[in-house]
Amino acid sequence: MNRFLLRSLLAAGVATALPFAPALADGPVAARAAGDEAASLAADRASILAMAGDYKVTFDFRETTPWRADYTPIAPKVSGGHESVRVIENSPGKIVLQHLLVVSDDKGKTMVIKHWRQDWTYEPESVLAYAGEGKWVLETVPERMRKGRWSQTVWQTDDSPRYGGWGQWTEEGGVRRWRSNWTWRPLARRDAVRTPPYDRYLAINRHSPSPAGWIHWQDNIKMGPEGGVSGGKMVPFVQESVLNTYAKAGDYDIKAADAYWTATKDYWAAVRTAWDEAIAKGNGVRVAEVAETGSASGERLMSYADELNAGKLSTSQAVAKARAIIAQVTAG
Image (cartoon, rainbow, N blue to C red; front, side, top):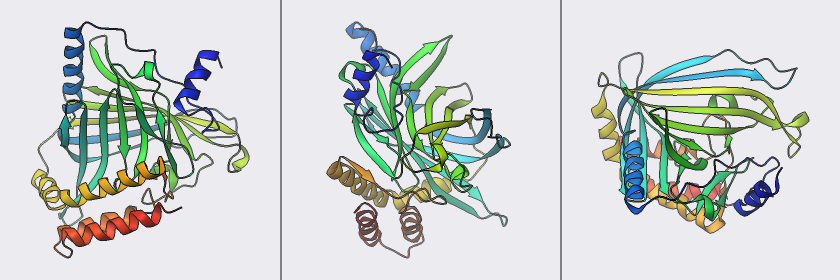
């Protein structure tokens, strides 16, 4: 590891926190004239806001290259569904997008499931990063790497943390994209329920607007402790390519998504606040990971929203229950 990278990693708080420290993204953004900086910021914001809308989504997961002779890649998995993405916060330096998954059961009944959330922050001082085994830490973004960049923090269905990274919106070959630094991520449900030999991803995250909508491309190295020993040396098992394609669509029950959000948005705002308080108090947070639901709070926080939507709980009752659960799962 070269000296500059080591110093940068130490400044970011990752070289000592992780057994295998991710590399940083590209170098600092070149200085721009005031007019160019304003135009670049406007273009960045437009690219982020363009992800809001109603979509047919295709999820394409493919393990490609094994990095161990004794590992055989699993078969590719392609699935899909419909998602409505809504802007729930929009200020000059921050944009928050909430994904709502809309599905129909075998009887044609529509169900809305609060899906993932993405927070975008301009020129961030820190980012909430996954540190392994149910732990997330607030890492300082090196000062020389903040200018002109955005962080993206991704949250699970119950608004507990998933992963965070930072990077720059650029344009190459006429294609705009945002590329993250290398980031750690907990296993997604598709892998966690299989109890594989790896227990996290080391990943680069990319977002690009497209004529049809936008794409989310993940380049994941599936990592795990050598010999399956917790805390042991992290080694790579297999490379995975994930391409999530969002194509604009209107052939599903969009009104159901908006009705769910109208009924539950105050509850979820309070849940976000409770998580923010826990993270600020602990300069990060510990939450046990659960294969089926993502986190120890997932099933209960989601069920309170469903009960609220069904009229079985008031907002104040649901919020009180949620705050108690968040306090419980973050107590350790």
